[in-house]
Every structure is written in structure tokens, then in C-alpha cells.
Length: 144
Length: 144
DNA sequence: TGTGGTGTATTAGTATAGTAATACACTAAT
DNA sequence: ATTAGTGTATTACTATACTAATACACCACA
Image (tube, rainbow over all chains, first blue to last red; front, top):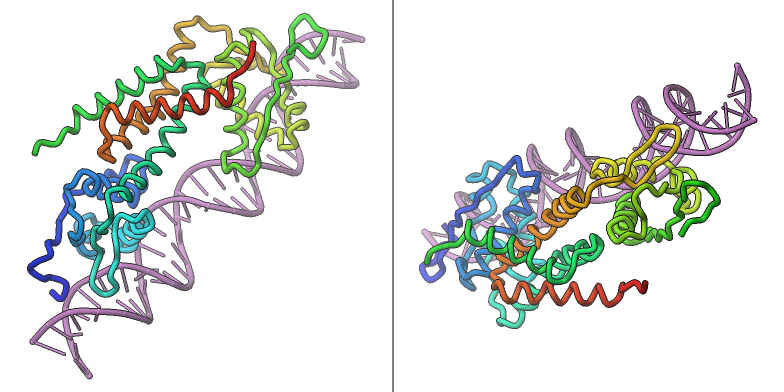
């Protein structure tokens, strides 16, 4: 009750947890919230659902949610205000792009290195990447 | 480089282990041997260095080497002959390509999914991938 | 100042991964 | 058969990751 002021919207995100994917729960949550922030599903200043509420909805331990939130804070995507809640960070676009780059660098580098190690040419490798991008993107295109 | 006088060449590969990279030793070994097979540094039928010899050179436990070899056998890249040793598998080129595809699919898919989750466009993502490919490739180009 | 809402530090339990020590099984050649 | 070379099944130790239980600290507001 205390946290709810009219000007601030608390966003109930639609999060889906797959308990059999092998991907840690807190990482699934991180990925989905990050996506919503990066694609403007969550706006700067929006308040995130509380740790306990989200934990209740997803039937997991509150600490698991807290862990996801902590990592997101470390990345600079959210800000916590003690006793109040968690909010999407207000950052300059340049900062956001920097975060994106760091996250993407890590995984894309691995993929590129693997391609080279396997003796796959530049053109082939790009074709590969493009194929997967299109495949996933067409399955998950969101309509506005 | 054939290092011993025999009918079958036993190949002593130059492997480098980085104990501080965080990458498991057996995976480092797998990656490097795989690369040599895929790029023809190791030919079909070549015998690999024995578990004990390699373990001795790299100062690690023989079981760690055995583990790497086992995974490579699972991938279909090498064949073991009990009591004799380990050899680069004789497979058709199509089979080799299939193995490549499987290995590459896994990691490239992750990269593509991450790009999409971060709201990075197709063009941008490919530019990213290309950048990393070129960067790593120019550092590791091997002269023939 | 009490209450009901925030997040979290601490601690613990469980599972998994990585490495290693040991003893064993197989093969070729004497 | 013996020997000296292969690889490995079994077992165990350690480190780390993930999840959870508990108790605590903070904040706004009536």
C-alpha cells in the first residue's frame, strides 16, 4: 500500500518460467525483464513488481527474485530504493547502449570464436547467424 | 607434425592450457584438438598422443585427458581402439559437416537470441558478429 | 509509533561440475 | 605367459551454483 502512488505505475510483467529448461530461474527472470526494459515494454521510472508478489506468482522463493533483481541492478538497468521497491533506472541512451554492447559482446564473441575454431568461413558463419536470428525473431515478434 | 618413426604417425599437438581462464581443462583440450581436426592439422587415421603422455606434458591427471577424448568420441571425431590408442575418425565429409553444424548451432543460437532479447536489429547484430569474427581471426590466422 | 509494505544479509541444503587417485581391462609383441 | 603399452570404470574430494528458510533493516503513512 505504501509503495503505491498514482503517478508511478507498477508493472505486472508476464513472465514465464520453464522449470525443465535447465536455465536457472533467476536467469530466466533476468532475461525477460531485461528484454522488456530494452524493448520499452518497461519504461524508465516504472516500478517493478515486488519481490514477494512475483515470487508468489511464480511459486519460487523470494530470494530467487531478489537475486535476479540484484544482478539487474549491477548491470545498471534498475535502481532500488530501500523500503520502497525497485524501479527501472533512469539512464541516458548512451549508457543503455553500453550495457547492451557489453552483454552482447560476451556471447557473440564466443560464437565467433567457435565458428573460427570449426573452420567455418566468414560468409558461412554470418549466414548461420542470420538464419538463427530470423528463425527466433519470427517466432517471437511482438505486435504493437 | 609426425613426431615418431612408425607406420602410423602419432601426432604431438601443441596444446596450451590456461589454468586461469576459468574454462575447464578438458574443454580447452577438446576445443584445440577439435580445431586441429576440423582444419586438417590432424588427418583422418592419425593417432593421438596417449592419455598418459599428454597428461604428463600438461601436468594434469590422465582422467582429465580421458574425459576430453571421451567427449570427442561422442561427437564422432575420434575413435578409440582399446589397448591400442585413439585415432582421428575416418568419416565422410557430410558427417563432418553435420558435426560442425550441431556444434555451431548451439552457440550461435544463443547469441542470436540474446541479440533479439536486447532489441538489437538484424543488421546491427550481424555487424557485431562480423566484428568479432574478424578480430579473432586476424589474431589467430595460421600461415600454411 | 505502530503497521504493513518494501528488499536482503546470513545461513544452509542440494545438486552438479571439475579434477584426481586407484585399480582394472584390453592389446601387441615378445 | 609376460610385459609394457594402451584407455577407463569406480570412487572420492572439492569448488561452485542454485535454491530456499529465516530473521532482519528499511520506509511511508495513518
